[in-house]
Length: 154
Ligand code: 4NP
Image: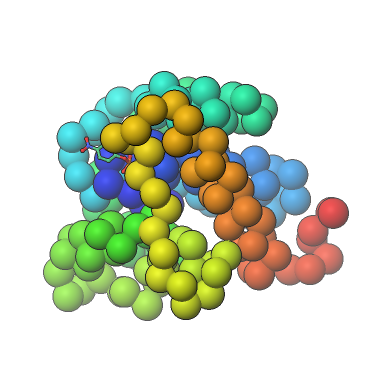
C-alpha cells in the first residue's frame, strides 16, 4: 500500500488489510510505504490513528518508510493510492521495476475508473472517515478477488 507521505492513506490501508488478513486467516503479508521522504520514521497522522481506532484497529506502531526498488521484488501486488503516486513508483523503478505489479488501489473497487483516494492531509479531521470507508470497501473487494474462496470465513 503506497501513498506519498506514508502517514495518512497507506497506513490506514495497511491497518485495514492486516485486520482482514487476521479475520480471514490469510497467509498474506501487507506493508505500506511512501514515495516521499518527508515523514520517514514518523507514526501515522493522528487523525489516521484516530479513525482506525474508532473502528477497532490500532495502527500506532506503524512507522513511515520510503518505497524502495526492492519492494518490486518483495511484493506480488503494489497498490498506488493515487495517480501521482503511481507515476512516482514508476520513477523509483527507473525502467527496472515491474510495473505489471502496480495497480491503482481504487481500480479494485471500481475497475478501470482510474480514481485516486482523496488525500486527507490538507483538510480537517472530517476528511478521514470517508477515506477510511473507501479503503475498507476496497480491501473487502481485494479479499473477495484474491483469497481462495474456501479460506474466507464469512
Ligand atoms: P499521504 O498524505 O500521502 O496520504 O500520507 C500526505 C502526507 C504528507 C504530505 C503529503 C501527503 N506532505 O506533503 O507532507
